[in-house]
Picture (cartoon, rainbow, N blue to C red):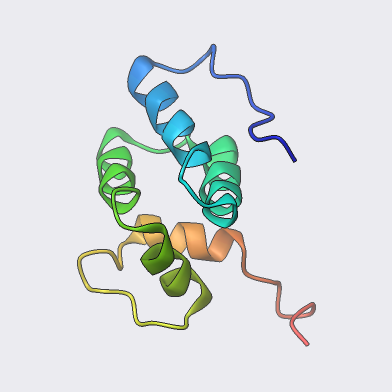
Length: 98
């Protein structure tokens, strides 16, 4: 896996920057988690949602990962609809969760 499979040519400069930052986190695990989410959703985020996402990706990788996996409680300031959208992006459907 080498990173994004999505082209950024159709994105505005702000979204291009956020897409790049999502794939260049510092840890490969978070590159994959946030990068894949950004590939799929970056063009669907409203400007307000993008602002929330930018604040989230400023948090340390280790913390974001623990919030997504549920090993630590998500702080209120990060427990947003955007964060839940990322978490749900990776949730298994009920029928697959065994």
